[in-house]
Image (cartoon, rainbow, N blue to C red; front, top):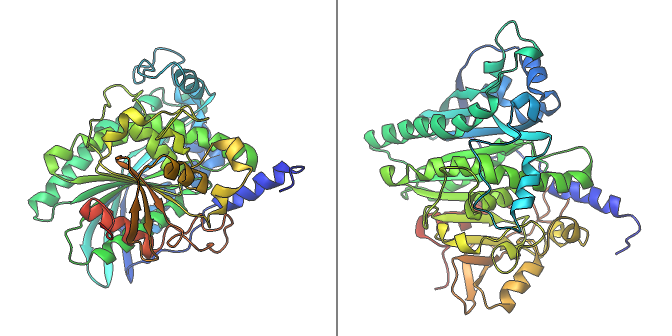
Length: 459
């Protein structure tokens, strides 16, 4: 590989992670009812400082056209200048870094000192009100929208609400908790309880519309494959500002954003959901792709910096990291470049599955490792490290079934050789097979784990 033009190599990586997905399998007819107030969106964007990120609140004006196909929640997370959000410079009532190690604390402190911070701009609830073999009827409502709250005439920049930061915490805390509790209770009382709550996250360069399409693809495949099996999932999908115009800087910047999201809004969401698990008896699973796996791992396994958001061993039943863009060293070994050491908290998830594929050139690109991470979980270097340490390593076939298990060391974390499963370059993408994780056979691999505690196959 020539090293004289690293920028062009990084630019190529932008295409490999870029994720405009094909349209997912849909019911024959999709009828969406929307209930929400009117809003001068352009004015609200100016007040919030999100005018350049319309792709990440696409549902605000167009929810009827961008539905989710199952009973679901969409958590919309964006970035804005911290002064517009009124994020405190010190004495944050919601966060504390006291539980972090000396090696990790400076990294977290630097992330949180950024002049632009992430916030929850909207929380959308989708309810299936009628479903047949020919069509699904869905009703959507905004449980929270910063755009509606901001658009109170007369709307001027001087009227930016001083509590947007606090409202973000309430959105994924009290508001989500109350709405989720109500939905779960009504389903149980109707004799159709939800068996699983699944948190999903897409990765780098994924606009909100495409994230929803991908969540619909996973959900539709899982439901179709489950047939009459006891599988009735409720999905919580995250949409986050995962793209920036300068490829090389974007890759580094968005990896840090994923860490911030995982430490904050996603951790709060996860703790909110886990707090209802005992009451309603569902299994809790997380599925993330690429940087989406990174942010979900940060939320699950890192010591919490969110106050009153602790997780206990077994709170998460299944964690699936598909071609994860985070270092394997987070799970086994040292802290890596990302200041992560998840070893003490691995029991939070009863089982963690991390796939890798030799046909994923995004993970194998030489320019990726020194810029972003060492031995990303989706790459072959991570697989070699796992094999050399005698850690659990499974091999799956083209249908997602386990055909071989090796390793002499017991661990809840399993590395999955998916060379036969994750194989194809997706149209209009680079990165080899990096995005080949939204197909039916990958869903079959995940469904076996969701239903049985592990993929089907060899004992």
